Amino acid sequence: MRTPTPLNEATSFSTFNYLKNNVHLKSRYFFAPINAGLATKDGNPTDELISFHEKRSGKGIGINYVGNVSITKDYVTNDSTLFVSNNMYNWEKLTSCIDASGSLAGVQVACYKSAYSLIRKWKNKNNEAYIKFTQEEISSFTNKEIDTLVKQFIDASVQLIKIGFKVIQIHAGHGYFLSTFISKTFNKRTDEYGKDPLLILKRIFEGIRAKVGYSDYWLDLRISVFERSLEENLEQKLIALDDLTKHNSLDMISQVNGLYNLSKKLMYPNRSLGHCFMKDEIAKLAEKYPEILWNLCGNIWDLEAVESERLPANLSFSVGRALLADEYFVEKSLTQRKEEINRCTFCNKCHYYSMGLPHIDCGVNANLF
Ligand SMILES: Cc1cc2nc3c(=O)[nH]c(=O)nc-3n(C[C@H](O)[C@H](O)[C@H](O)COP(=O)(O)O)c2cc1C
Ligand code: SF4
Image 1 (cartoon, rainbow, N blue to C red):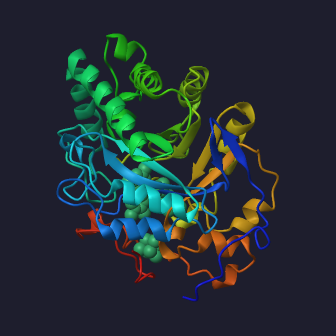
Image 2 (cartoon, rainbow, N blue to C red):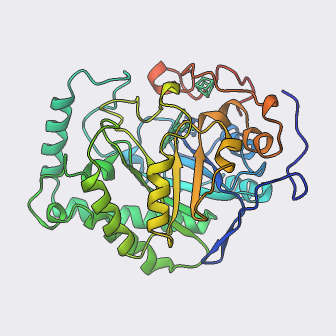
């Protein structure tokens, strides 16, 4: 792979500028949260992980997200997952290398609290059993357990802000704890946390804002818009998004699709779904709620096509696999060098957990980190 010259004002045709709460975003293209499986046993970033993120910072990338950081050791998804603890090292090195390269350091705050083991297979053979199991599990949590989780989300987020992260993304997508808890399919509780399934999120946001205010960082929510199929009725989801925007605590909302334990097809969309297939849906929301920065994700591989259309000023894009395959994907795309892009072939080798591999790998990029 030839190393392109660095992106600068003269070579870039993208003129994006977004300033809010003292945080200045210079590109609408982000590196999506990716759990690379490159954490130490005590939940800290390895040098390989730092290099993985450094490679995908600057280069026309607005936010570089560190994916799947568990609120505590108890809720990790596997034993090479990052987690927040009172023994955090190497994190400032990670945030400062992202910052020095010219991107905002983002972090995804996650929690997988379930006795249901994450499936390795692409599809669950018994969706109904999974749904029933999760409904019963969510109903079984005591109020005290939920209040403790809320506190752990708040404390972890505050700790990550202090370490230097500028964008705190609460992970309520993909079937993680918050994702199922806020979904009417799974949350059948009859108490206050069931009557308003979004209450848990509101308490987390309010708690973070009460401790660190509104300045110098953004609060972002990643949420699965479609859960099971792209054909499903979005009415409930749109009501929930409306409620969340009116709560006035979010700076950003980031779309994903799919639930890990139902089907990974929507989480890692097939090429056949087409380029940027969520654009119309999310652009509509961006027009309707201009005070929020909206982010869409999935199959973004042609930035010339994206830029050729009129885009709401508050619409942004997260790129996963295209940036795994080529860390210069955004830069090459924005400087008319798309023929030089090392393309993702949709070979699925990066899904290390499903493939039984210890950490991330890529079928077309031998220098992933
Ligand atoms: C190897 C791999 C790991 C991922 N890890 C996470 C993660 O930790 N958190 C998350 O929200 N999404 C994760 N994703 C999903 C991506 O953020 C993104 O939503 C998805 O890959 C679709 O975007 P793409 O078509 O540009 O790849 C992961 C994707 C891949 C390929
Ligand atoms: S491993 Fe395959 S699917 Fe994943 S980013 Fe690399 S080329 Fe794409």
